[in-house]
Image 1 (tube, rainbow, N blue to C red):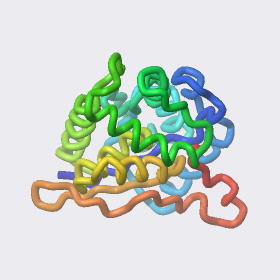
Image 2 (image 1 turned 120 degrees about the vertical axis):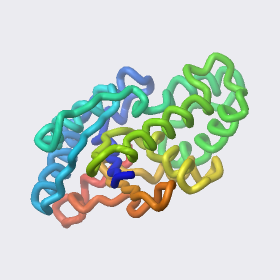
Image 3 (image 1 turned 90 degrees about the vertical axis):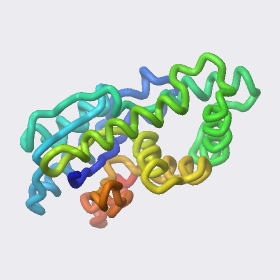
Length: 219
């Protein structure tokens, strides 16, 4: 099993309220990604394999990072985000819980919605909770089984699910982890026997200098 580094995409269209509109990087998102790529280059970090989801924000993050300078970027739909806006609209229509408008409302909304989703109480959901967990686990373990260090550009929900799978988190903890994940943050897993051990969570070394702290974003 190999060292796996997960990266959340750069800031997307945070004003969006649907999946399609959200799926593009902001100007700041491109800068965050470029700074992370430069950080890896400056620290001598090299990756033998590079993966990303098939969403536009994943591709754009990988491109702005210069990820292809490490290895050919392999796109894998199993690394795509859960359809949060679609699920939230179903949750509102079927259970009367309004779609959140800010991060404070997300903190209350997300655990409730995840619980309903996991209990199959969101009729017509684009994907079941179990299917999301299965594809996340399959992709993570398959990448970890490969040779050489792997870089993976993905989304906050998938990173939170990786934490749930590897650390046996409950749904509230998974939801809170999802909210904590910052744009272009670094998360690392290393092999420990037949399992994966989380060794780094939500690191932003490329955004810690005073002149870049404004770029520490969650949405």
